[in-house]
Length: 598
Image 1 (cartoon, helix red, strand yellow):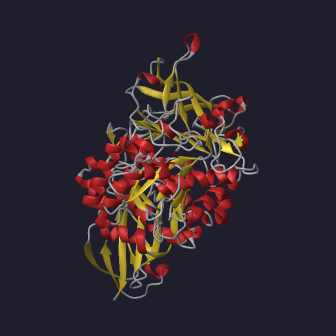
Image 2: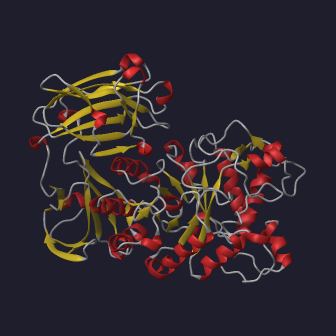
């Protein structure tokens, strides 16, 4: 839907009130909102690269690339993420007490300094019109609740005798963003407030809204989920609803798919192998709850240029293929997070492989086939011709980070200081030292682990802190691995939130590693108990080969006799297979095939 380039004063006023003017109304919404997202949404979101600071010019530049290079492959949504209403927002953090742009009814407005076309009460209507003119759709991010600033000023709620303080829930607030209070849906005026917010958003021509701080904790926020669903439906505009963050409680599966088009199944997903590995489990858990118009969301694709264009994705090429293969075979929404204006050839190839994207958009009967200790297979059907899609993954590490591969029995640490684990490991014959911290159970919150006085002990009896050497790699939740100085001349500590894997090269002459591992105080135990493993990498326990064979009996796929095998990533026909398929899959890699009966 497009809008005129000029906005008369009466129209600006009408838009500011959140009304849909005569002659500019959206087409009537479908009776079932699921029809608004019949396939998993595909698009771009500003968060992974621009954080809180994206501007109108940057959003338009992304839209231009999408229209020119990706639209023909199915990509269509351009989504402006959080803090678009804060003039001075920077980076990926939030500012306590920041002044927010809003109207006289406590409804957020784009900061004109960042979105100049929003001046004069036009909101996002001009930017949405620009995106629509390219044949694309426009989306925004919205926090659950009502701005604290509106409550402080006790602004009126449009069309009611009530004010912001009458509906504010000051108890159930977001733990990571300081801008909002919740909305107490038991209070008169609460639904009217959400109705007014989405009426305004609809008047701008928005097609997609990602509502944050909503799906976790789900049951605490369930009445606001219902209120937002009701408010969107009352606008008469087909606005796709995405819920964030995760993990959404699996016990709410029936409810969430009856109220949203997509919902997060994990916390923020970044370019870390540990989080990618964990998405196999999460997508398997949610598999039975997927239906057209209701999509479990494995989160954005952190590929290409990220973090203000300061770096490229840390995923290896094989891991990027795994990411795209898993999201596609599980039919997750595909929302790219990198800078579209800086696409490299490899990233572009991932986003424009129509054979792979067709699996995400049009396959059926998707689900996991097996997981043999990290050798994994998923299958699906092509409803057009009945052929079988087979995705195979090698999610194993070259150096197995398992209990069987440790030189000291693993320990479980909790908030109780008495569970602190003494580590004393023989390093002889080893090349790398790997410190592993894994949550024992999946739960909200994170546990911070500390390795106190981690040190190498040498053959001559001398001791040297591990922290004197740079680590080879540190994969830790929220990039939290850090070295902390300790008082009293003690050796520095190594600190990270679980799950974490930190690798060090073992220095020449070192014969032992010693440390004490523990939960880092009561405040560090939000994620519950953590299992501590210490693995020493040596030639005899490290696989240096090109990958592993994944054996898939064709009978397990319901296939008898020879089948034609086609590789969707390389677009090559691989000939016939009978009995079983035995592809070689690189470590952390994937392959994706179409199998057709002969």
